[in-house]
Length: 95
Image (tube, rainbow, N blue to C red; front, top):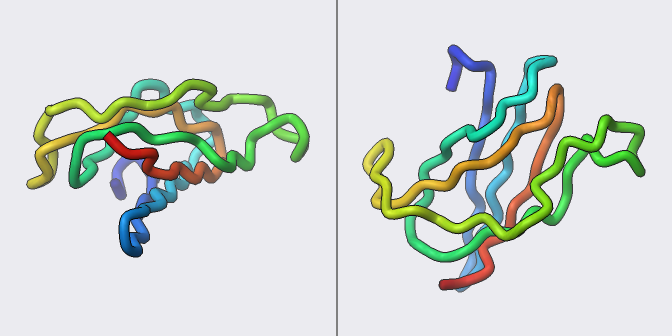
């Protein structure tokens, strides 16, 4: 998303996947929608904005459910909160 200065990519291997989201702006992006290839749940496993890393504590503290909402050619998408100038790692947890 070059207009929003957000970079995201997915790394898949076997039955697991990791989604990496980078917000390059000093603005919190609440309810930011990202396409994902299948349904299921995603869990935040690392957030550079956590207070233990000196951040402001803008995190995704609950499981994120993939909605059957098409986006960019994918059948599902998720809504996440992106911290300012932060990087978030999400792991797929299954269906």
